[in-house]
Image 1 (cartoon, rainbow, N blue to C red):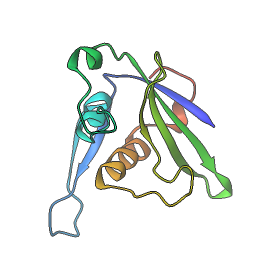
Image 2 (image 1 turned 135 degrees about the vertical axis):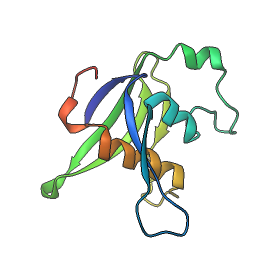
Image 3 (image 1 turned 45 degrees about the horizontal axis):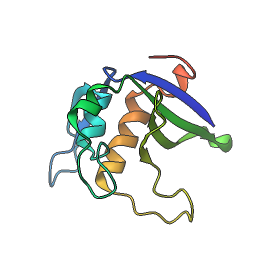
Length: 126
């Protein structure tokens, strides 16, 4: 497993898909912390949002990933608070391998893979 560290203010691209259109949408930049919030990751298991005062204390995020064999694909397994160890997102397939992926899971992982420079920043604070 590899780990890439990001400040919460790291800007990341998010592709907006236009409804009912096979054409890719527009790209917008938001902070990684805002993306986690937008994807529902900054909430407890019951969907209750983490208090804003706790969110304001998050300084460094870690993305845990591995290279998937000879194909060179990257699998992201987890996003967590580097300072506290609190996990905000985990691959739904971890465990039995049959987790249910949501659109928010796809949005987060695709953004990290496309615009997160995960592989180029191993072990660095970006």
